[in-house]
Length: 481
Image 1 (tube, rainbow, N blue to C red):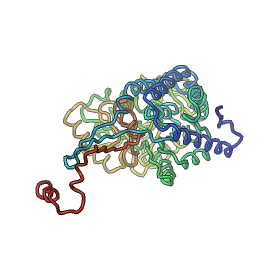
Image 2 (spheres, rainbow, N blue to C red; image 1 turned 45 degrees about the horizontal axis):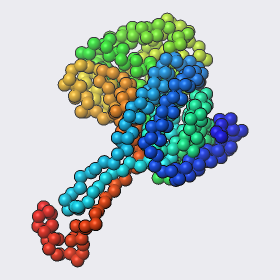
Image 3 (cartoon, rainbow, N blue to C red; image 1 turned 180 degrees about the vertical axis):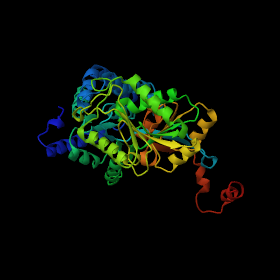
């Protein structure tokens, strides 16, 4: 029987149910700690079939939670990515599960050595609201590939999506294997305090610190995907239309509510007018109108909408020029929560939009003299989750790659590095720690157990005490050098 935590009479009952599920998963793992490759592949096949069956319900739930979210965008960015990941990992599970054979130094011979990859146990996934299906199901796929049991805490800001996922997963998995735990803040805090064997958290840097503190009480390892201010660098000679189309694809998708969304642009001083003009042209091409355009995502809730409005007010008060890009010059009511793209020109470091992750359709434009100046600007700030460079000069591309540190990077593109299953995805420093996706994710959610096996003949016996015998002298003479 599946307990619907979202309909529990109060948070206390939800917490009790959450603890019950956790205990059941712990006991189940204790009794069956090593899922076979067949079981893992079958679990992923069930998930694939369920996601196809529930696609419409999931995309509708996401749109309802946002107020409006394009079904095609949700299908591409939340559903399709997960389906492709299932296919990719299913084909490789047997290979990934095989023990690896490390090199063994001659002094230890004869022995055999191997590294075995075991499930860690019960994995806690704390998913955000911006891609509520993708960022819950993608780590679930990896956790199941690695043979673990999983509890998912969706965001309280997307309750309809949480219930849709709970219904879908309850149809195919018992609660002691996979469970969704809806609930408000009290449930979220209690979730982080459970003694998971690993926690994956996607969200803000500040909340990530709280998650890490809570996990530290149980010495629970964490994977943190935290976002941050991801810069985009425009070169002096890239065709501006090329750069802006790809830049605004990343900035306007989901109305900029993406952890890897370009957060600010570093542009040569003499190209800023050209950049602004192309932003207007490309936005009109993507979204000729905004108010009644179902292709344009709304801001998730009133709180986030007001936060973004405060960013604009702060920038304006401190001397920035705000350029509203609203192709049809529509009157957009705050209650509708649809924000056009705003460019912030002449931003200063004391503006909130230059200090905090924006997570919305606001794009500061910083004037620089050269790509070297742009790199200096980036290096003086916390390491971002992503960095984007637009330019076709190979020498300059290499300069940017070698002289910047970020979680990931695109040359002449945005966002799409996230969708490559065979590359690790994660942040560095304030933008996160650890990786998931593909093999790196499998290893992240597996325990790598080193095993040495010695045969009946014990060659090491010659090196046992008492010391200063013949073989000890041989080692000192020939090997210690």
